[in-house]
Amino acid sequence: MKIPVIRNILEANDQLAEINKILFKQNNLLVLNLMSSPGAGKTTLLERTVDALKDTIRIGVIEGDIQTTSDAERIAKKGVAAVQINTDGACHLDSKMIYHALKEIDIPSLDLLVIENVGNLVCPAEFEVGEDHKIMILSVTEGDDKPLKYPLMFSRSSVLLINKIDLLPYIDTDVEKIRRDSLGINPDLEIFEVSCRKQDGLDTWFNWILHRTPKYKSK
Ligand SMILES: Nc1nc2c(ncn2[C@@H]2O[C@H](COP(=O)(O)OP(=O)(O)O)[C@@H](O)[C@H]2O)c(=O)[nH]1
Ligand SMILES: [Mg+2]
Image 1: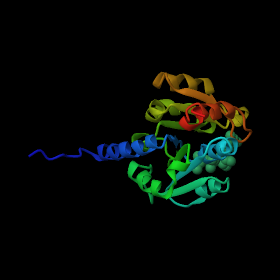
Image 2: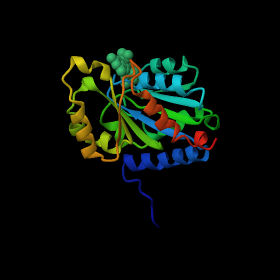
Image 3: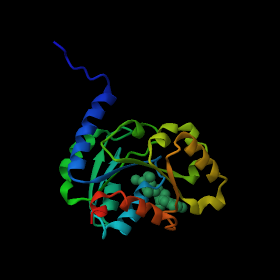
């Protein structure tokens, strides 16, 4: 008799991520997994994205944090569906947490689902949740050495948003080095330089989303 053995936590996670993915595909949903260090600007980017796109596509958000519901409250104020996951100490979201959060969301009524992961440059990239794309934000105040120090997240993401470029006059971060090192790790990475504060460079990001939203493209 052959007994199936689930080899490790990541394999169990990937199996449930496939189930999430099937549900997303059945509903023609674009799903983005947004990752960064704490404070890089994930929730601010989401607020700007919801403001810009909510009259064009129907957006839902799952917020991941160790504690509090403050990010989900920020998003709910914008008038879109928001669910908060509190991980109670875990430093990333996994497919099981997303699977359960999906019960709180009316999936067929959405075109785009964005998952804001727990602020952390390491573990979130290791755990598939069934998303179409991983998106990462690096703010210029974090320094230009991060791609080489934390390569996994850069290697697995489709888009890198370099945020807070309004602060460049005050710091010595070399954006060209971030670009060079990131592309050295992942030549397919699309890189957008933005300021969520000043709303600079965000149109390219909004267009990137629209061109990948199945229900928008088929209109
Ligand atoms: N100067 C500047 N501050 C920003 C920008 N984007 C976000 N912030 C600020 O950075 C802080 C953290 O942002 P938040 O979106 O909560 O980051 P998160 O932890 O990644 O979700 C907040 O005080 C934001 O107002 C930006 O483009 N420029
Ligand atoms: Mg946040």
